[in-house]
Length: 211
Image (cartoon, rainbow, N blue to C red):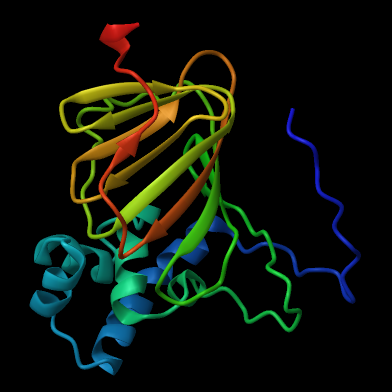
């Protein structure tokens, strides 16, 4: 188990978390308002993010459930923090409030508030996702770096299938179809750094077939 860092007491108790469905329902109108505020078209935003016009339109109309993989490149394109897209209230305390985002069997904890540029997240991935990883692979603009804190991680990159253990890392261009999830009976804790710029992919793990 990873050690818990000591967190000093906040001046005031944090407000109770909003209902997830309520928060997600507000994302679409917020995306449309932000795009119009920036004078951007769906076609222009599509070119900047690598997300199709139809997917962007469905996100704005509420017919597509927002996910981190979709919101990250949109936030980067508009140069705003992810908090603005999900409507998180501004924090008066300079410390980052670790408000988790639940996505099925995944919990995502933002570790930074910087608009655009490099962004940090902690993922807690629970086994038994009940999906076809190949079908769930996604692409978007940017680069990602993953570091396995605990557990074991399966990483699909296009036609390649990798396994990473504790202390192993991977770096890849997110324009390549990708998916990652926990292996085995225990959750995997993963540190993720995402940014618009990066180097060539370096994966310190071997394909499953080579093991």
